Every structure is written in C-alpha cells, then in structure tokens.
Length: 229
Ligand SMILES: [Zn+2]
Image (cartoon, rainbow, N blue to C red; front, side):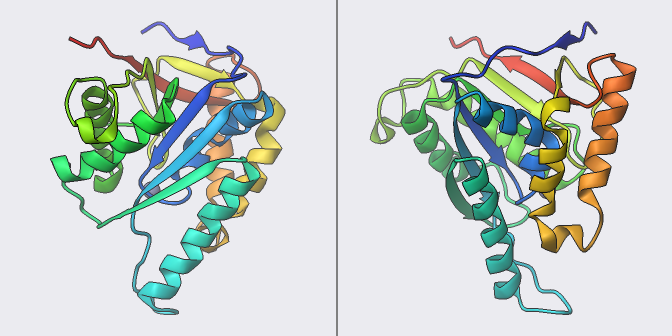
C-alpha cells in the first residue's frame, strides 16, 4: 500500500483523541499531539475506560486516582480539554457506550479524530476503536437529536500502541518533538515503573523513521475517511 508522509499544518485544527487507558494517546500519537499543540490546534482528550485496578501494592481506588491524575497532567501540558467516561473493562460497544462519544463529537466538532488501531490485541483497545468508528458514523446522521445537530468528522487516524501496525497509510515525522514525547510518556510514572513505555514507543518511531525514510522518528497511522449516506 502507498504510504504518505503526513506533514500538513495543524493550525486551528480541532483534534479529538479517544483512548482506552491513560498513556495510549501519548504512546501512539504523543508526537502528533505535541505538534498539534505547538501549531495552535485545539485538543480534546477523551479517556474511555476506568483505570482503577486492584494491585498488590495498593487498592483499586488508589490506582484509579493515581492514573487519572497522570492523565490530567498530560492534558495540562497539551493545553487540552479532558473528558473521562469511566467505562468498565471488557466494555461492549453498545448504543449506551456510543452515546457519550456522540455528545462529545457534536459539541467539540473535530476535524481529526485519533484512536487506537483495530490491530491491537488488547480487547479494550479494539473495543474503543470500534466505539469511536460507530460514534463518528452516528454523529453524522440525523439521529440522537438530544445531543444537537449532526456533525460529520472527515478524518479518523488510528495509531499503534501496544502492537506494531501492519496497515499503515500515513506517517508523520515527529523528530522535532521526540524528546518532548519521551518526557510526556514519563509523566505516566505509574506505568513507567512497570515497563519503559517511553523507550518502547520511541524505538518503534525510530524504526518507522528509518524504514519509511520519514525523519529520525516517525509515528504511523491508518487514515479512514467516511462517506456518509
Ligand atoms: Zn492501553
């Protein structure tokens, strides 16, 4: 498949990120988000799944609060608006889960939506990708009048988080913000303690940059446009 270096300016663009967990968005598209912020885009980060989890070292609630705080901190650095949906793990993409996403989309009116790739193995990553696509579609249709007028997003970019993606259609050179991306991922200290996500992500970006000759570090995306009937 033809791969395109995706370097358009993000000035005045409205970028909506929908992730499963705190850290997905910076691992997969942290460079893109930092460039968007630098170029004057408006950013809205939506966190779908409840990050609470019982751990040996602390309670469900402590884990939840710690991870939500990290997510908010990243939102502040990106000058982003944040929304937390609190969906349970193993979420089923039902209409009740799509509703809050339609509400956000019709209110924020994004030019670009970012979410996880369908190729991710994590079941909640795939569920959030499905929910996002369904919400984009339904947001553009003349239904759910309680959330306002239909809004049609033109571009969905799916990124690689836990698993390298095969079906790449766009690359973005993020070399100018690579070290800032590393610092941004490091803000997820609770996750960095478990494994070095910053090094893993930047190493994949380096691989993409070399293999596709798109700068020193490059993020990969699958682009989807929607033909609304
Ligand atoms: Zn995740």
